[in-house]
Image 1: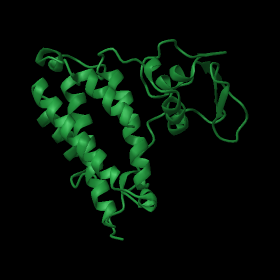
Image 2: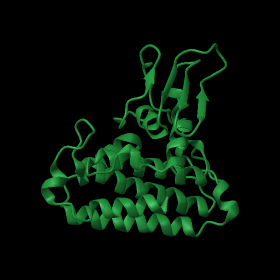
Image 3: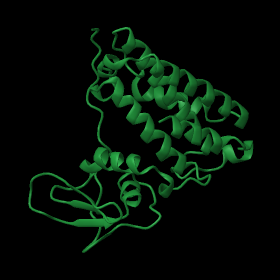
Image 4: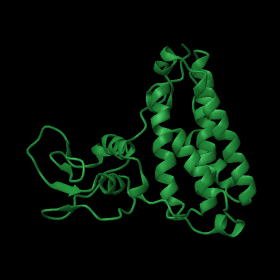
Amino acid sequence: MIEAHRTLERLVAGLSDQQVAEASALPGWSRGHVLAHLTDNARMFTRLAEHALRGELVAGYDGGVDERNAIIEATAGRSAAQHRAQLAAHTAGLEASWARATGMDWSRPVTFRNANLAATVFARWREAWIHMVDLELGVRPDDWPEDLSAHTIDFLLGRLPTGARLRAEDVSRQWSVGDGPTGTVVTGGLRDLAAWLAGRRPVVSPVAAEELPALGPWPPHPPQRHDRL
């Protein structure tokens, strides 16, 4: 995870105001929107961590997705220097919160996906690497760490229809969806399969004997818990 943060910092180190305002790979979002999201995502996870370490549950956003979207829109237009400063500050705050966690703390519940504190580290790992591709500043899916790619496939496998299988040709790993009869088998490099499942453009498109199956939605967030421990 720390490697992802340092890579992101290097990626935006020389970013200009003009580049910030240019379109990202995400429809309707500039690079500024992506940076605003990554920055506020770090702030939100810090909020969850600080409360979890006190034995408390708190929503990531009191105002839900509307608050999240409003924050992104309000901060996307920052200058490149402002984006760098805010991203660095909130990233450091998140890493400091995680550094205070001891062994048992990682199992403390959080409202994010009704999971635990450890799950937020994996979520941030995904967010950082996937959105670095969206910035279109030189990071591509083939730059993703192997273990990040395998984890992303595990997380997103439910986007495939029941019976579908994935086969990574470069690491001899396979995944299957559900217990139904075997259906479409999609093959490709590990990172390309992960990028395809994440809705990003693979360096080399995965292939199937017939056509690639349509992907379902991103795994939904379960209802948040708001009780205190």
